[in-house]
Length: 376
Image (tube, rainbow, N blue to C red):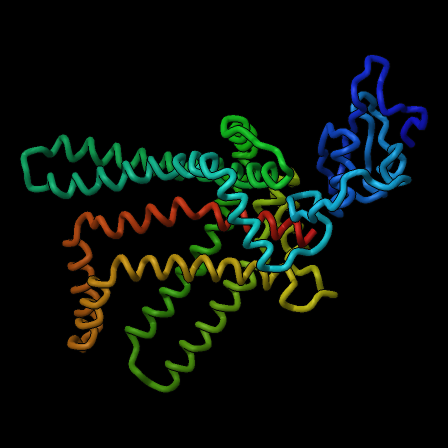
């Protein structure tokens, strides 16, 4: 228990401050007025662990003098849906609204994170476009140097991806808790998780890549084979299997980033905890369960990406559809589409659409962090 003899003012007249621990994370130091606000907002419960900022002994928030045994002095406090201390389930609309609020509040921090992977990627794309223009000239050495530079920028963009993912988790948790984190501090913290997040990225994205490859193999079987009923049924069965495996794995890794960074969980522990949390909430209505909310968040983002992509490539897509309507041979059609893609070169509309997606992509990470807190 906390020292019951603690007074609201210490010997030097300084306000007493406390540290609380919720779901393994510590918050504070906070004075009694802040604690009362958290109490009224439903983010601090009597059974939550707490200790005096100047002591090491943990007790419970119920033992803090003047907190739960007297009426709070903060009138008409608005109920908040802020981050990790939140204990009541949010509605899906509240999660989306909180996502945009956090993104706007920390826009420049999230933009700085995005630039870590965006700038090397842009350099790689622009260098590749310049190399295509330089082909056929007498600048073979410049083309070679440009290719090496583009490859290095691509590698750098991939290497920065784990820092980007970890930084989104850290910034979201900090902003949701009412703090104003600095970008440099978040980057320093995210770098510590680089080996674990990188290993998990290789595993998770590698499995997704294999599943996509499985889908391409199915498409190849459909194009190469004859149009018999047996083949059609076989292809449909493979597509159902591929969709089931993709969806099942997606649910299993729904929260791997949050557990790996926010919970500091090891490789296997992060995957196991992610699966358990994703399949939790069996006592809730189906639309409030983590797996369905996660699937809906991902679907909203994919729909946005699809809309932006179609808008930027509508002319090219229309050309492809016309070719599809006039060309009967599948192999000839694929060859024509490949040649047309190679002859396009650098497309400013596609580049702008890709830039917009990258800048807004932290919204997905923020939404999943909030869903993770809500699901716990």
